[in-house]
Image (cartoon, rainbow, N blue to C red; front, side):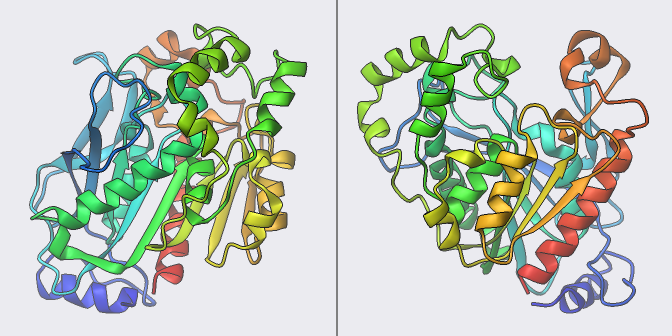
Length: 365
């Protein structure tokens, strides 16, 4: 369904203003949560809770009152996760809406892309972001959560299952218009769900030879031991998953992917990347030390037919793609809040969100 048809449906219900030039709608953003319990056997990666916790953003009527969503202790939040109306009603659109599933970065959480989720919701998308088991900041990290990174695609597939089965959201989702967006290791994850396959030796061999590389010692892993120590543990607990690391985790329901500062791109085989046949958009900063463009974003763009890449100038780095930090956040979690002089994180977010909206509207017509 074209953006104009969705806009007409929303206008008929009084849910948004008339867009110009056939652009996406501009509703308010609603936000709520879901917990899914997949019935299929799966690898929970040592997570304490065997469930998929999901944040859902969606278009809400203009009468819904948006408030600042935040991450951190009540009264002293660390990050601002966008403006949204908690548990607001959804716009009574007469046509089903597209669904975007979102994947956070290593050790992050579903809320850390709130700036993007809220903007996609205002443009007429239903957005579902998941906490990846064993690899999210809402519970203790596990070695399996960090090293079984190909398992993340199964989380997104089962979130799609859960959203389609949800009694409130399911009937309002267009099954033919599903996309995926991800940041950092989430960028890897959306490539995987598009059909990319992994060669784990590309990372393990590199980290064995150069254990102090940024790729091998990301900040979230600082208390996890060396890569070799973690891998020894995972071999004992998850041999079956390790043996399936090179398998395909493609989900044919996903029709387009949007990757921000993708990490571990160099572990995805060129043959599998060349086989991807869907719209792919990649955005990366020109000063990213965690996931350098030359071996991640550039590599993916060079191997995926028709993929587009935007390199953001002016010192945009890796964690610029996270939610905007408060004063307390800058004091307490500095590494995730540090931007180069002249980099305005909110402006970067606005630019990337606009690009994501335009990309998904065109790709999921």
